[in-house]
Image 1 (cartoon, helix red, strand yellow):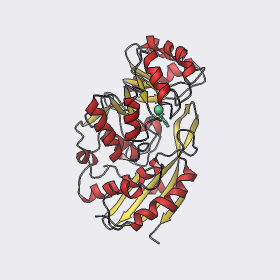
Image 2 (cartoon, rainbow, N blue to C red):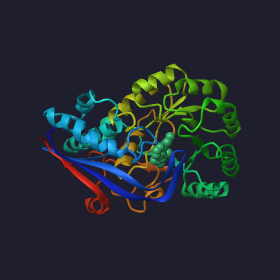
Image 3 (cartoon, helix red, strand yellow):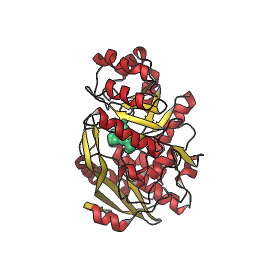
Image 4 (cartoon, protein in one colour):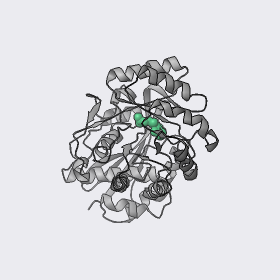
Length: 369
Ligand code: OSB
Ligand code: MG
């Protein structure tokens, strides 16, 4: 059992090596929110994956500041000695805020597994030593630029490319990238930028042999996606819609998706993510691990998660140099299109605390009242 003594919340400024443009905005410098917990059994790190603005999902940094200090962390302090497995239940009375909850559970899982000298991969029963990964490519000013950027990633060894699309940047970019890369595994992600009125237009993507199309419509539009499934031959995948195991069950019961993108933070944590994986595996539904442009902390955990056998499609878990010129942990490298799964205790990475201190622009400490 662990007794948390201190939660330290930090926001870090991390410049991306290349601006990342999606249908909801462009990021050039990412504000990364990390949590360090100190307990009677040592300390651990978690990452929230929350964005600065509520443009991907409703959670955003200023709201997280408030919910961490006034609602979530006080409940953990008040609960008495706990295990990481108890966190979701303790925080359950607080509605939503799943990414914030995930960061806290993650930090405590890290402590607990380090104390037990077990890796997160061992704990969840992941089997692969390295996982096949892809790269998520942002919208560019011109299609020529997109083709060049994709060529660079293919030259790096990525076998799966995801293109961000939006109205006005969809069929032609996909056509050109497919022509230049006939054998690459190709998929697209709209981050909710379309509506059911666009289905006939989007069906023009069918000839390009896409692995999947991700979240075309609104996060709550299960019926719209079910309509899409009927009218398009490309497999349909959901991202923003999948905020819990219940959302997953709903999506699959309504035939609103063939494939599920599992983002641990979005479903409330890594333990919930394993449950979504298990449920999908039981139905033979393919899943893959999404990414939130995480630092090495989140990426380490995502690699272990993606080593579970049901993750049959490549994840958005790219090598460090695709995101950062310098990360806050040791870097991850791509070898033959794969990245090795960390094997050390906890999430298996060492946080460079001096560098973290250098790039911190906000730091708060929360202690028991
Ligand atoms: O929709 O998958 C998404 C990044 C931020 C928010 C949403 C998404 C993404 C990505 C990045 O596509 C994937 C990655 O981390 O490599
Ligand atoms: Mg997505």
